Image (cartoon, rainbow, N blue to C red; front, side, top):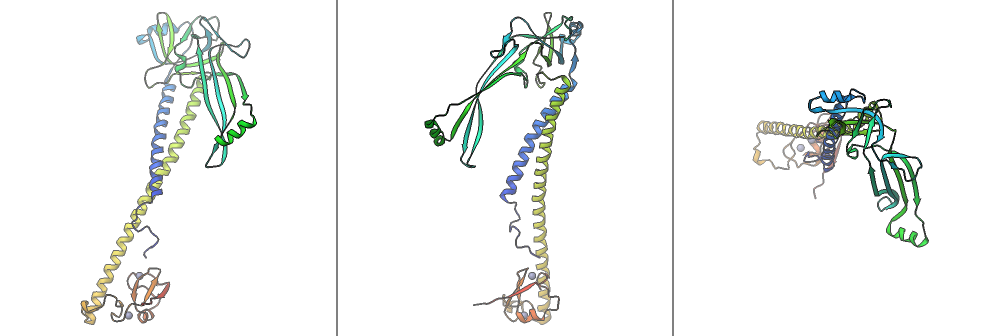
Length: 357
Ligand SMILES: [Zn+2]
Ligand SMILES: [Zn+2]
């Protein structure tokens, strides 16, 4: 039977095309992040673990190019010459200090009609002094100089101070805020430090340069890590992030492929339906020609609007649900039960009389 509700062209709707395009694009993006992250994790797991001890220099002297391309070093932060003092906390000393000022404000959303909190970094300053990673055992003199620590990925520092300075509200500026749609809340100030004596895991290139062991950013494709986590937790954290991207990739991949399958199925069903309709019509015409020969009626003498059963009276009713107008009322009444449409052989649920005016 002909489904009249079907899109006449069988083409996918704009919404379906949009869904397919967006989900495919997101799958591609998520997959590329996932694959990059999983490579990072694989490299991180392969990195050579080197301990800070008397053998350190020997290992490097024997290594090709006096270098371990990707090494894991765990040690304690020790200053080389100078140290940085916390500006807020007494007796708090470190080698990296980062001050951040964030402006917090409420922004009026004209679409949802709600105040949303937003925050913006308005000032950030990072100071660093050269430092070493040394053994936990103070008797061991060996140490590793950390080069370009600020280039490391997700440098995680310890928050040593934070404070919130609320904005003073006066009546005039409150009115002004309602007009502008922005209401400042205040300034959030934080100080973060890499403190002396803190444990750090560094992953990078280890080189022996003029009797000084250096940890520096590794070659292209490898990531430089300086983390307060131990090595296992660092790997675990990276694995979790890979898992998140993998889940996102799978979810959007499933959405994209099911949308594509649905569109293809719709197309296939549409073409199958069309083919069926054509076959039914051909069959009907063939039957009709046979009848005309039997009745000895000339095809040209039959009116195009004549009933297809008796070939003489005018067609006068519509068969539902197929919608064919092909017979006169008398011929309909004479159809053997259960009554079927003479053209498509579909069951006739209802008959609507046709009034020609
Ligand atoms: Zn008839
Ligand atoms: Zn029909």
